[in-house]
Image (cartoon, rainbow, N blue to C red; front, side, top):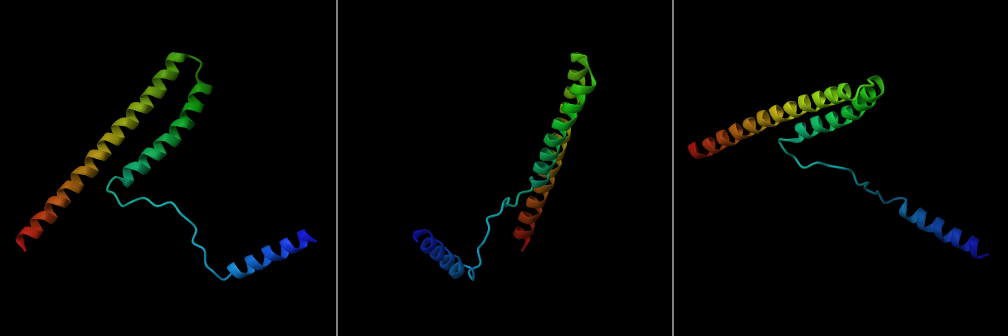
Length: 105
């Protein structure tokens, strides 16, 4: 008897709340000039796991594995450094242009 009453109460509660729209939390990232670099980093990390599995299973020599994995790490590092420097220089030049435009007005 109590199970039936509890089920009826929960159905009433669910029916009452059905008309209310619920907002689902979602992941957002604050606007930043470095969001593209963050995406590049996520892709590089994902690919590094795949490359590590392939290299560790394909090559037997530890030295060869080390060379391939360190080569991927160095190329990835240089890519991120170059990309970050490019994004930051573009951001700084836009900031300077906006400051200059505000002074001239």
